[in-house]
Length: 78
Image (tube, rainbow, N blue to C red; front, side):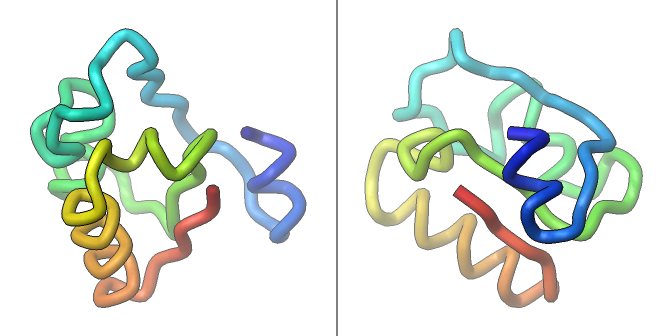
């Protein structure tokens, strides 16, 4: 994923790896990425996900995350 960030001129500042968490879990409540999405961590310009299904298991979760990033002017790369 650092290569995906670099491909758009960015760099990785943190890697909240949550591979062990089910994609059915709401991204906002996940232990590792949740604090970033809720602005409880450092400022960031966007997020890179390994695949769309890591943003959420269903369309609603994926769209909610996508709209949140768009509304905040942040990048979302999958």
